[in-house]
Figure 1: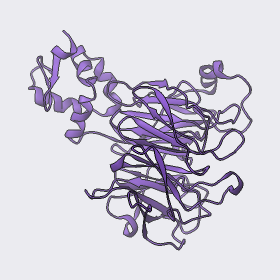
Figure 2: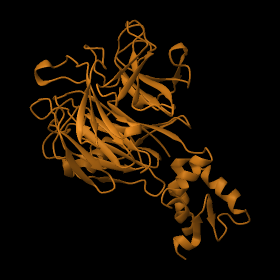
Figure 3: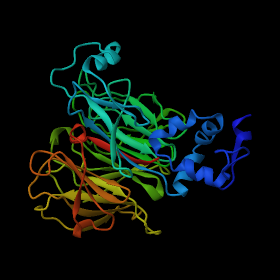
Figure 4: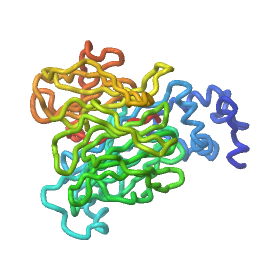
Length: 418
């Protein structure tokens, strides 16, 4: 019997045969969607009917979401705290530990020259905020240092893009595609970018596309160029360059209008002096617009200190950002800017970090909550902290249990529901 004969989707999940013997279809379906994400691959091995159900073009995922049984994942690209004894897991989340010699065997065929001494290995860590658990995704290749992490929710995929080759420390064009959908849980190499780059702006725009712009090349020159990747077609298309080269810039989606925002960054000759403006790409006009006076901290990189949040107001057109600052920095609680044509609007709200002095920090948003990983020493170092929804500036930060192997400061992140 084919998959289509075994079940169909009409508002809910249905099947012609019993999913679970003796139980009505609706009750059996509710039982299966309650199974945690990490065990879904095991469910598929029970029967052909279950395999068809779980692999049904994201229908199983949608049913989990409809019933409120989906899980919120925060994917973090971070240095391995113990590279000689890393923790690895499958994409499904089954945790295992591999010895140093096993790790070396799995990657020996890729090593063209000795690795630079002291260079950390990077991994993809996943914090399951729903179940309060951690695991590390096993990828059968060393992922680039400082690669960008971006999620495509509708496609159920997380991408790792660009960064530095861990052997040569040169920018790369690499693209890794990890399938987090019930149908997949696999990884593959995507088509490389047309240009090698690192420390660039990157964001998912729409259901299948990822935009990249700026960063620097192998000579540490700030880049103007930009391109867009279609994950379903596995192809890159070059778009017009920005007006300025921008290294260490940060990217966001202008969700309502499918625009792509590149925030701040600096030029080749002004390294470390962060620009106050942003550039927004309009796919309709195929052009860039400059928005002035967005980033108001010339001494701070926006990377790890800004996070896009969903704006619930129906008439809002633009991008709302959280700006994370330490408790002693003087700044406005909120500011709003528009471009000259008043088509694009950027709203920035400050979130006070739970520290009294400036330390290393990486901040993000997850399911409408503010999240921060604190580093650089001090009482809060090596832990993740989270604000509950709605507390913001007046609320209290709570600690997230963070195993030591997941305590290093991330470089990039993406969040996705499964």
